[in-house]
Length: 300
Image (cartoon, rainbow, N blue to C red; front, side):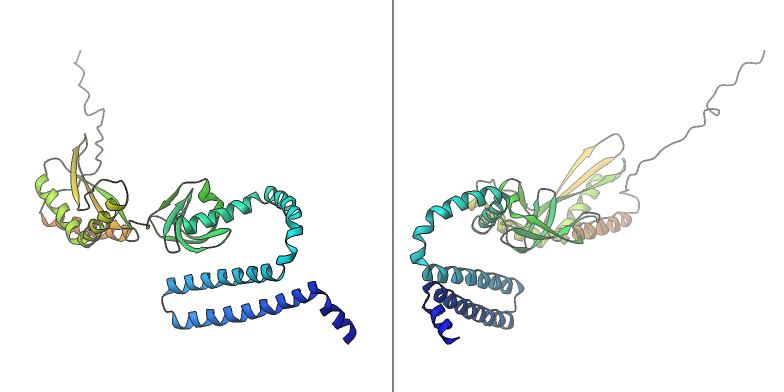
């Protein structure tokens, strides 16, 4: 038995494989200890997630470097074979290769990162994990209204970032312009109605407007975009049914629906306090009895 073991160890290839196995074990132990310490001492979820991802990548890189060092003298004769096999594999696994290429584009092209709210094709939600082949997204929308989570985790191939448009709601400018429309009856005090809308927006989204203005200033310096107004604005149009006010304002991308709720609540309270000077409009249908409008016939 000892003679057989000596013969195996005398074989350079087997010896290198044993060294590689021991090296893999050491790498796994070291990375495991680092992951445990990262979980223990890093409190921020985002930093902890990125640290674990980096350690996983470092483990794969260390294993690859170890194999290259151990088998460097064997690589020369494998170039032609690897070329032919690589061409066949590339054709058969073009979707996988495209996903890996998409992963590199996501990481180095700053397309999105974990925590961002994105829309890739028809999929919309928050990025919770970026793998080599797929991105995991916590879906928003779907069968629920507004920007609430549906509870489904969607797996999107990274290949889609190379062929589909990607909308990032929280990248360089984590704010959205939102609008609400309020119909007002003809004959109301339009100036008072405009003041109520402006006051409601100023009180509720003032902080969002200030932060958005600062962030937009950085956008102007970085990109070819014009200066934009981030303070609330009210516009008016008149149609055949009522006077329609539109309130446009800037809001944090995760606070759109709650902000709408607060603004609408404030507007309704203020309208009711005007004692009829400002009244909401609604569609009114008047039914007319044809018999009541008919002219009586002349007696013979």
